[in-house]
Image (cartoon, rainbow, N blue to C red):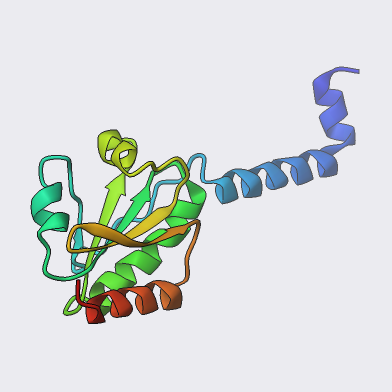
Length: 150
């Protein structure tokens, strides 16, 4: 029996396999593009050259999301980070660092798993989170960092 004969006899199985593969690939994000950022959201993208100015010298606490385009959990975290950038723009700064493009920054902070989120106050890490983190948890940590004096 050749492949065409098998498909004719087992077309239901073939359709189920194709649909399962399509769902799996979509969930894993292998071929999907990351959602574009909202241009109205005040999310910064620091580089090695701009780190000092954007993060270290910031008068507000800074949430930095270390992520990558190929990382499914990072793409889940992205909209949470963007929403916080809008919501807390008067209180905190939100930044995203693509570890593939800014590997030196990721290495500086020992980032080996993503998403990794660090909160900086006066240039120092005051809180860190690993994995997808809720908006409530991040909001609370940023507001606490904004209240504390160092």
